[in-house]
Image (cartoon, rainbow, N blue to C red):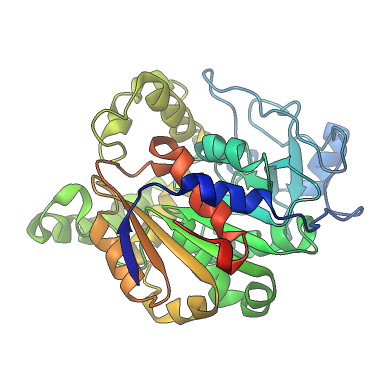
Length: 382
């Protein structure tokens, strides 16, 4: 483990990414669809309960901007959103028929493709600042995981870390058929990457050249949340599964239609002092508001149970960086230190006075670390 504070050198990291010019193109027959008739979509999705399978944009949300797959705009299948189709978005059909919203940006001739997985109750927009920087030199894919953002929730019982890992594999196989891949997981995204490496070993070994673990953990999430002692968190964690089980019975389509009501509350545990700006709070609240209650409740229970310390050896052959903020209230820095210690070749980068939302709070630095993973080993400096 290499432990250092984030400092100068980011120009060299970004310059390294600019020097790379390999090819990682999308297949002509990738499962990206053009707009069908709504009746066709209903037949395609089957008889799933509409309240479960679909999501709606709350009033503060904005449409997903169009992206380019083959060098031109793509008009794709509408999501079965509870507020109707999401115009201008690209969609991808997962193996079980669930339709998710996808964003593709950056260079089609890039050295590598970066896939950014968001955290719990968030969506692809939590990576938008980082993705914008990376797209100047790399190909970038972000997407809303099932039950998050504009994506459909999928069949009941599919809200598991393992299923999200399988979804990631599906995205890589069909949208990135060739070329090196760099994965970055923020918060919940970390466990998803671990499960992906565990369940799809060959794909991981053959394609992934770099891993960025951002404000995440291999185990014990919740035990020290907000810096609370175990005497408080232990009994809370004992009753949490029962409460969450009741929440999974919800048939609500979104957490709330009024993101403004939770905009102030989202600063708790998420942001370090000075970073919970009105803009950051607003866009975080929008993401939480439009998440699917049943999905996020089930995933919360899965996060509490999450323990993948034994599989971390799978990362031994892949360049890995662990990014942490000293003021992270959800996954305190001890989690990142434990993660890095379990990975002898990993680099731990600590951001003083930063919180849990590193993709917003330290976008430039996080982007530089991810870009470095796409560079040749000898060029990765910091």
